[in-house]
Length: 232
Image 1 (cartoon, one colour):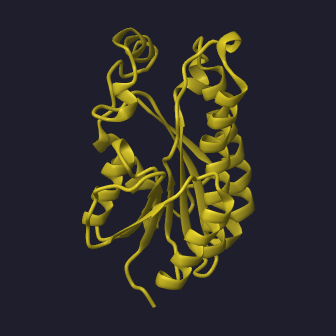
Image 2 (cartoon, rainbow, N blue to C red; image 1 turned 90 degrees about the vertical axis):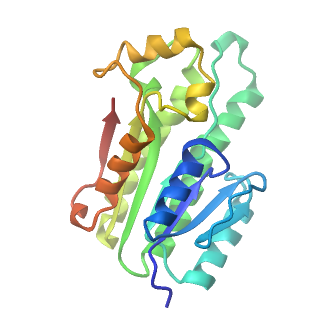
Image 3 (cartoon, helix red, strand yellow; image 1 turned 60 degrees about the horizontal axis):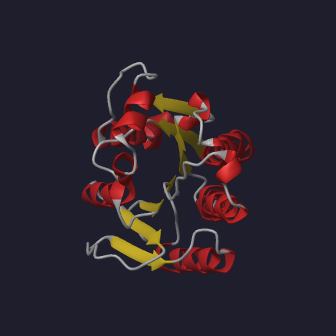
């Protein structure tokens, strides 16, 4: 039986997902990551799958391979997501469908398949990443915010369904994180508009994110579930 804890992280090609993969390899995890394309991340304890997170057959094949090679799954971080800023009247149906598929359908598929594996050892930690755009409800973020709100509601119900199997489900709601694709896609005006509505009035560091994740996946946090942690 594979002895290292196994962690699945979606969206590891760049930004926060790539950093988390590197960070948790250093922490002693076997990381299984995925993205739509190949990446140049070569680490001894990292395995990569090229897939679209909303492609059910590809996701199922990935988890069959994880079960075959490792026989377990301890942590899932649903990081993959795409953003969009557009007013409702200028938003195409394709844009809506793309956002829903990547942000919500991908989260659903990876959660469902992860629970099946986690049940083997009656242990698991699932973390979904949400966004400050849900409570802020800024103009131009209706569809993106709606996909993140759907993840939050999904998480609340999933947490109740799987706690009996020793699996916890929690949400991290992030504002602007330094040195990530999230920060790079925002104009200074939008960035300042977001930050001025936070308590800290400052950007998050990646270390803020890993600190919160470490708390949620800790063995001592077995009773911490169905929580939304807002950072910043």
